Length: 67
Image (cartoon, rainbow, N blue to C red):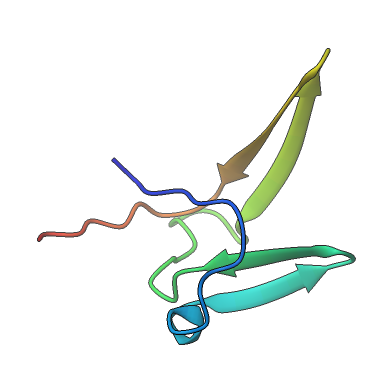
């Protein structure tokens, strides 16, 4: 199961992420996150319906982590 977190990473973990800022929104992503074959970009889209809001990600290749 992929891990998704909201909020800024702690200072000691900050160096583990790429940071992109769009207006007031900061997105922290793993440097291992890659564009899926056949896509040109990774898109993060805010979806809304009535009182619900959620983020969807498109064009990202899955990351397998073996621990």
